[in-house]
Structure formats: structure tokens, C-alpha cells
Length: 453
Ligand code: ASP
View 1: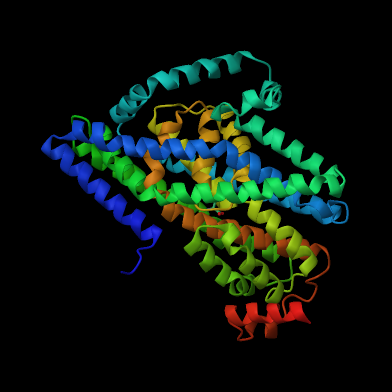
View 2: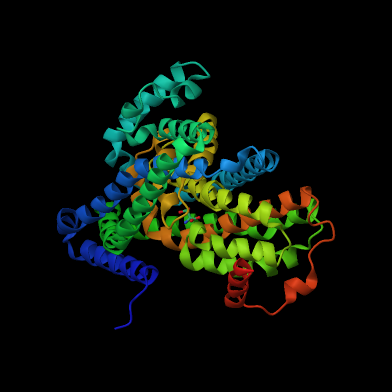
């Protein structure tokens, strides 16, 4: 029998979950769904949360410690990190603009929002209390709070992810500074553990069709409550939310990247797209920047004229830490969930979203679904119950496919800017090379052959 892909499985599960939820609310067996189906969705969300701390701790340490050439490449390194940060912060600012103007959460009826808020009140209350204590404290307390005083204390709660990220960065930098002989076994340990944890994510994602099915059925029953027609209100709100995210992502691809390519390099953006398109397709179908990396590197070097030195440094680092698409998704999702749960977002909350979405997109692993897991950090930081993930989880896979395209295109764009600033693209792109007929397979074979030369 032909194996159904995970994406298709999730799609089918979504539809079945919605159908079951609707049948349940119209035929009055909602309580059965809540008691017997919804828990499987809760288990799925718990598994996502379970993996979050180990994932960021190990993948960040592994990623940073790969930068052993930092001394040699410090100039390129500085430019790369700077550009990655600037593009991410700009992407989040754009996303916040979209989220505030369109405000998808407001498409939920006022009383529905109130109801959701009450449902999640116990948690929201404690968050509000902690938010209130933040308001009473000094302006730099956010910074002070990021620095842990006991790492075991930090890893014991998902609310302390920023502290875990801080520790991981410090640890990674210290590893780079340690003599190679002593560092090698430590590095092997972290990169091996990283592979194991990525497998765990894969296992959890295998369970995702069941989780998504249960979540959606439970969500519809929960949201519909006494009034089935309000379930349709949720669909409308979710539709507007999904379109807002897609609008932000499309803006990056069709306006933002072409503009900076045109301003800062001699390359025509049409040529850039032609060169990078296969990598974008692969990003779309795998939802993983890491899986796409070999093709991104190949295209950027062979078609777009970036040197190996720049590409091999900038792109792997970008796949790990530069995720413009993920950060857009996080910002819009955070605002959507917050509004749906009846939170008013202050300016401080919005700035907190900029900071945490930047950090969590840096911390997100380049694998399917990682961005959703990291959203826990952003929600926690603005005092919104992470259970709100349930609202958007069903839409995550298609949005993940699209945000990964943006992540990969963003990495390629920065590699072009760096190459250009290093004088590599002073004559633009070699059109013959760009238009040469070699398919992906041929390109890979060529590179294999080159290795033996
Ligand atoms: N799937 C994305 C990537 O690999 C990460 C995410 O989930 O946002 O780039």
C-alpha cells in the first residue's frame, strides 16, 4: 500500500477532527469528546512542551560550538550575526504591524473571548500576578531575570527558557575557547545528543495526526459551548489569522528580500529567485531548513556566485539561528492567542514579543514544527497560557511549510549580501552559470566528483 505522507495524514486528521467536533456539538455528545478524545490532544501538547528545553539547550550548544573558525572568520561572523539579527527584528516588527492592524483575534466574538479567558483563568491569573510584579520592578529587571543563578532551577520550568538560552550561549562560547583536544569529546556528546533529540521530535511529529485530530475535535466542542454557531466564528478567526501570517511571509519574499538584494548587491532579484527556487521548493516540502541546507549551499555557490568560504559559514549558521519566517509566525500567533484569550497587549508586551520572538527563533531547531514549540516562550513571557497553542496547532503544518521557505530565502539573501560586501559579486551573476541546464542531481554528482579531484 502506498504510504500516506505525514502532511497528508495531518490534513486528513484536521478534517476528521473538525467533522467529529461538529457532529458532537450538534448531536450533544460533546462531554464524551472532552473526556475521551481531547486528552490525546493534551498529551500531544505536553510532548511538545516536554521536548522544548532539551531541544534548545542541546541544539544551541551544538550550533554555537560549530563555529570553531570564529577567529579566522570573525569579520564575516560579525557581519553575519548583525545581518541575521537586523533582518529578524525587522521581520518581527512587520509581523507586529500586521497583527495589530488586522487583529485576527478580534474576529472571535467578544463573549467568546471572555469565555476563553475565564476557561484559562487559573493560569492567566498567576501570570497576571507575575506580570504585575514585573510592572512594580525596575526597568532592567527583564535583563536581570534572563541570567540564571542556578541552571538546574532554570531547566525545571518551561517558563525559564530565556535563562536556558543564556546558559547554552555561554556554554557554547566557552567550548569554542577550550583547547580542541579537551573540547572534542564534549562536542561529540552534544552533537550526538542533538541527533537523538531531533529523532525524539520526529517521533512526536509521527503522533501529530492523532494529536491534531483530538485537539481539533476538543477545541470545537470547547469553543462551541452551548452555541454551535460560534464554532464557525472560530474558523473565521483562524482563517484571518492564517492569511495574516501568509501575508507577512509573502511580504518578505516579494518585497523585503528583493529590495535589499537590489539595493545592496549588483544582482537582479529575478536571477536570485531563479537560482534559489529549487531550495525554496525543498523547504516547502520538507518544512526543514536543515534538510534543505545542502541544496541551499549548492545553489548559492553554483548558481549565484557566492564563494565556498562565505556560503559554508553563513548558511549552516543561518539554518540554525536565522528564521525570519518563524519569527513572523511567532509574533502574529502570540498576538492572536493573546487577543483570543482576552489579554490587552501593552507596549511593553509588544516589545517583549520582539525580544522573545527573536531569541526563540534563534533557539528553534531547523526541523518541522520547532517554531510551534518555541512559541511557548513567547506566550509565557507575555503572560498568556501556552494552552493557547491548541488554537493554532491545526494550521501549523501548512504555515510551517511556508515559513520555512522564508527562513531559507532569508539565509540565502544574507549570504548574497555578505558575498557582495566581500567583493565577490562585483559583476553580478554569471548568466551562463545561472542558466546552465544542470539539474539538482547532476549538480550533486558534479560536487561528488569534485571531492575526488
Ligand atoms: N520548520 C522551520 C525550519 O526548519 C522551523 C519552524 O518550525 O519554524 O526552518
